[in-house]
Each structure stands twice: as C-alpha cells, then as structure tokens.
View (cartoon, one colour):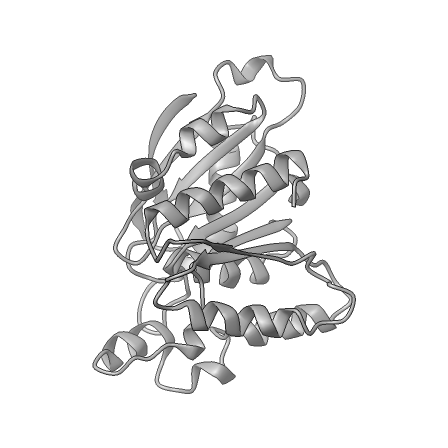
Amino acid sequence: MTFMQFHIHSAVLQMGMDVWALLPDHPEKLQKPMKVLWLLHGGSGDQTAWLHNTRIQEYAGAYEDLAVILVNANQSCFVNMAEGPRYADYVGKELPDIMRRLLPCLSTKREDNWISGFSNGGYGCLHVGLRNLETFGAIGAYGAGDKADANFEGRMRDKERLFGKGNIKESEYCVRKALREVAAGDGLKPIIDHGCGEFDPWRDMNEMMRDMVQTFPDDPFQYHFTMVPGEGHNSNAMDVLVKRFIKRMMDGEV
C-alpha cells in the first residue's frame, strides 16, 4: 500500500490537523472510486494508533479498491465539546469534504464509506456515524460503550468539559438515545458491527448497548456483535475486530 501524510487546516476547529491515509498502489488504474474506511483512535492515541497496534496495512492491502483514512481528534471523544472545538462536525462533515478534494479517487457514496473505532473511537464512530447518516453507510464500534453509562467519579471536570454539566442520558451525547431515534425513524440506517474482548473491563457497557439494539424490531441496523475470546481492552482485540469488519464490508462475511 501507499502511505501518505497530510497536515490540513480545519476551519471548523480553527487549527491544523494531521491525517494519515493508506491507499492501494496505483489507484489511478482503478475503474471506479475507492471504498473508504475512516478509523478513529482511542483516548490515549492519535492517528498513528491503528498503524502501530494492528495489521491494518495487511488487511486493507488485500483489496485493490479500499482506502483507509486514519483520523486524529486529540482527546475529544470525537464530540462537539461543551467547552471546546466541534470535533464531531470536523470528523463527520468537514474532513470527508477535505479528503475527497485532496484524493478524488475516494468514493462519495454512503454505501462505500464506513466509520470505525476502538475504545473512545468506538464511542466516537457511533456518535459521529449516527449524526451523519448520509455520509456513512456502516459503523464498526469496538470496545465501545455509551458515555452516558460511564463512571466519571474523580473526573467530573473532564466530563463537564466534554459533555457539559447535565445528564448525558438526556443529551445529544447519548448514543443509546441516538440509536433509538434512528431505529424508530423512516430515514437512512447504517449497518452496525459491534464487539469487544471477553475480558474488556467495560464489557458490561458494551453488553448494555448490545442488549438494547437487539430489542429493535426487524434488525434495522443489520447488527452483529463479536466477543473476542481471551482478550481484553487491547490491541489484539482491535486487530481481530477491524479485520472482521473489513471482511464483512468487502466480502459480505458476517
């Protein structure tokens, strides 16, 4: 694969941002635009995390028509922060427009664009994906619970900075609220692939979301949950789950 580094200016964030891309060799030879996987990092990471901690180059490199965009959103949880920049708008709206101008080989079709992440990025891809249904046709959320279910004891200042002082369950930041609203509506619905490690310390939060989604009539999200045996909240689980997501989206393997 071809590895590219970009430093772009975000008008939404009013700052420069790093973005990395993995592209097939010789994309100019393709007969149609490439499918795109937008990958979001965890809380302690940045755009380098997936490249350094998984075999994403190998998995994406198995296909001639798949590009991977490695996104950085600092320590924002990929939300429009209550006290800070609008990272959800950057990731879900501005960044796709910028990258498509820089790389015209990227498909603009929603069915060809998938957003995925692990840990905070898993929450972030659900939050961003469910806000931008016209952009992303599938969401791969891994090691991902709802921040509305998180314990912020000892970290209330972080919670207020990101999500405000109110109850997250009643706010725009509640993923389960967004899932219920999208499931009940008549509009577009993304495919959702979800999973975590067997020994993930936040397994209960993942299972709470799984159990709720599985109550929706007619499986509106074509939902699938994977438990990775023997793994926790770690790079091995990341690796297994992103490989599974790519195969599902590229080969139709559920």
